[in-house]
Length: 196
Image (cartoon, rainbow, N blue to C red):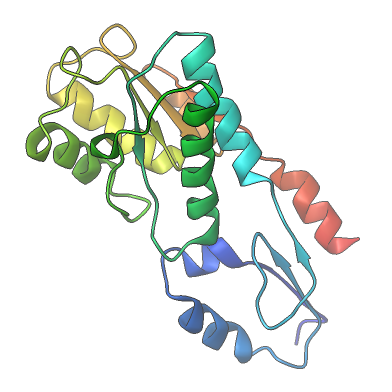
């Protein structure tokens, strides 16, 4: 039997509803519990500043590359950090005096549904490089990787035709062809704080 549990709640839950995530953790009641990324059952929690990380990525696309038509691929609607990343996107645009065009914001999608999000933007909404879209920023690297493949399969070049950026600084983002800009989150430091 473990002496305690450190739970990376957002990874355990993915896109699950909060009640389902709570039920999962309920079976460990009685053991010391520390949560990462979001609180469950009133347990002590070590949070990451997903808002700041995403805001820095969007601001990079706006200032360093001069993009103004930046699409946002959302994560699951029930995921609190995905909501913070969307808020950061909106705030970064507003700070530059750029109105948020809702056609550039995808519906909520599962973390691995970047290809579907691109399909919605390109086919349902008629957006693509050269017709109102300069960059895509995704709420996770997994979304960005799938979006990259979907954009490339349509014959567009990244970054020549459009930029793609993600969030989490996964090894996969650095191994992608081409690698893309992403926000590095201090997961090691977060884990150490949870154990401290």
